[in-house]
Image 1 (cartoon, rainbow, N blue to C red):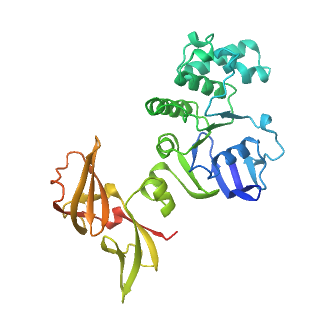
Image 2: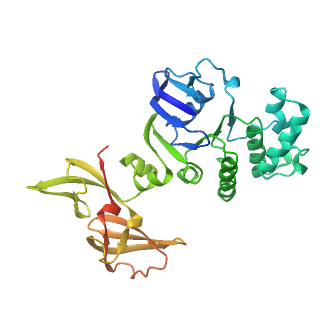
Length: 347
């Protein structure tokens, strides 16, 4: 098990990581997610032993790794550009780590064929030059090379970032299946939330070197911990609000109207999120808002509707079979605040 305890790191006085702590259990895939400059790559380099933290510890199975050099940690690393050796063929690339460990040649041959099969490449690929391979095939060779020495931890740094979207989607499914079949403990760096959701058991979301939230993909999507997390995940119905009180009554004054306060302890200025997928057309929900339909866009499995409520725009993600009125027609939308409404402290 990998464990980070209170890890911090600065470069030229600029704090890249600030008191980062989390664990990666054996066989677990944890994604490091965040925007550029959030500290993802720095964190990966510290785990790999390529950077030294200013403070804090990195441990494996309870043993401190600070004095263990990178090549003795038993960790594998896969880069975005794959870093394949152009002078070696596919076999030579995959066998590299095994040969560096002075493994017996017959065992090396067996392991190379085994991992090529695991990543979906036949033995026909063994003698092919890497320059002749497609981007997807090169990615599989890089993964096979990383898996061949059976690393205790596999670190993947934006491994699909250089591929087009269609190929990335297909290979992401394969990569997830391969890592899980191998029970490979993995740390996966990405700035793409869809990638993180598709591959990770848990996600560590970073903001400016700090952990903004640690959660499963479902937990992260259903319950973002802050306005930053919600915005990073792409939620759009975010509005400033003020907590109002009158006797025992507590409510939220917002640009789309008065809304019930789900937490009676809230005070002052806050930000609210109304989940687009939890608002419905019609009056069935507990909270009802009147507005005008100003735009609708068919998106395959769903239709996105933009509703003008007062001077604000409210987005609804509706099933594609929902019948919508013509644009500029008055509509009523409604929701259950326990499902649709989240409140964050103002950032």
